[in-house]
Amino acid sequence: MMEIAPEVRAALAAQEPCVALETTIVTHGLPHPQNLETARACEAAVRREGAVPVTIGVVDGRAVVGLAAGELERLAQGGPAVRKIAARDLGPAVAQGASGGTTVSATARLAARAGLRVFATGGLGGVHRGARETWDVSADLYELARSPVAVFCAGAKAILDLPATAEMLETLGVLVLGWRCDTWPAFYAAESDVPVEHRVETPEECAAVLAAHWEAGGRGAVVLVPPPPGAALPRAEAEAAVQAALEEMAARGVRGKAVTPFLLSAVERRTGGRSLAANRSLVEHNAAVAARVARALAGRR
Ligand code: PSU
Ligand code: MN
Image (cartoon, rainbow, N blue to C red; front, side):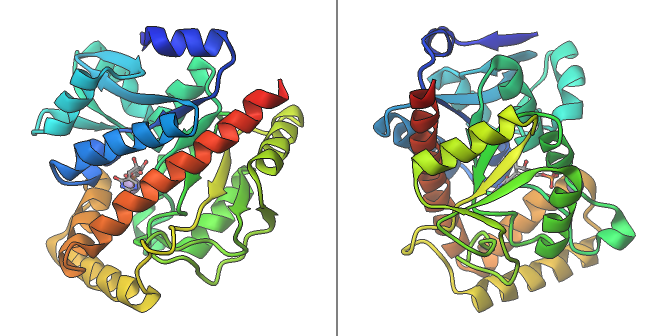
């Protein structure tokens, strides 16, 4: 059911550092052609830091761990047939021969099955604002309660309820680490009011904490990486754009898996594309930090 690319298979056998990358950000998160450029830039960043990039997605019913360049291009072309595939959608996608981008939940599931421990993306899914009425909580959180994978991200997307997301991760036993930060980054903005309990300063320290977490029977972890200085948007600007996007969404009655893609594009319009630029550079930065930690983890074996 799952296909591991030869390069990835060899790297895993040799215990070389690998970094998994998701593809919903390609198929549903960023517009074309920035989506493809960003995905390639992430792969390049991982290689520059001395690790093997492992982009994961579903192509014609094949759940591929380590997409070839042409397969990634096909997903990036998009179109209505390209699905957004969360962990629970893997079965239907494979059995029906469909193609799609895998969300954090599906990517974490496949990465863990392949034996990968380090995974980078832009933002994690989480508890949506208004979840008390809608019950909209991303399956990403529940999957991290099960799969022993560390996700490097700039926090949960700014469109979410951050304090509720942090509480939920605590309930689910998902470890949260701050990469050189003491509060949750608010995705486009570098900080928020939500504290992070455990801070790490170096790849070696991060690797040591993750290794101990897994040795103690822990499963998923989230490593919060604030956006690099040049990339972050001012907090007030990001917040105003999100508020307006949420109102537009309510007026249009958008629901279910369309919520996240809708909000991302509405925020992009309202920041004059600046959120898109921030998104691109922070994902690449996350991939680079993840690769450095993957190397430190490999060095411990
Ligand atoms: N972060 C982004 N863009 C995205 C996503 C995250 O900057 O497109 C995607 C991730 O794949 C994440 C998914 O797993 O959104 C969450 O979707 P939902 O809220 O429907 O669970
Ligand atoms: Mn949802």
